[in-house]
Length: 308
Image 1 (cartoon, rainbow, N blue to C red):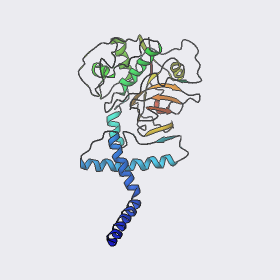
Image 2: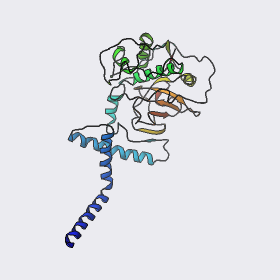
Image 3: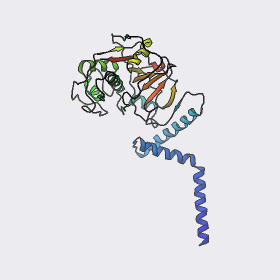
Image 4: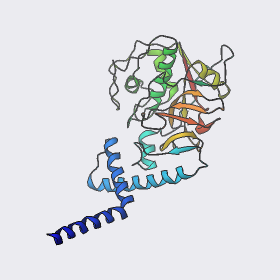
């Protein structure tokens, strides 16, 4: 009996040593399983091995980057951690830069306090899912913002109506801010309760809406801060390098194409942009990214403000 007990204890000790030696591997496996549950990822057996390998490489990348104390931002796990950069671009980003052809330009009505502005919390952070319609979310965010600031309505508005009904854009495949704001100006827009989000392109169910804007204006780079003091503005950016952003001031932008659209909700006294994305609250700083001052990621190239 004592011999069996001794052998049993020895076996447990060896298992414990084995687990200790393989702790990093086990932890990565456990983290990957938690990741798949958190973000509702479902794979077949062979794909799971492939995605786990990508995930492992990403975790090592995050740890190396975040250990570098010279960095001004951190990167980390989010819903994109199991994707290649090519997959991310194909699903979430626009394939080509939009045309820039709006005629009316924003002119401040009075001198604004340019020290800082922050409209965080004015509108909710939303998640476009695997529908590449950031253009609709940014445009709707600009419209929601100006309607709330002017006490017209606090209602969440329908991105899905734009995706389905704005035929100048291409639904979940492609679109631009100019076309979408023009559509809202001409047709109005419904609440999200009356035209819920489906995350895919459908046939247009209701071609007009209750909530109106009088128009929209192109905002030139030197007028962006005065415009934001008045209301958040929709902008096109190059979002290629954003996928793993976690927190801090992002200063490693590239600007090769305007392939994504966002809502600029503020700026700090050092010129840092405060930007609301449409990748859900798990991404970034509860759905928000802070960008280095100036034309980071092309953020000053094409931006628009709605007015009522």
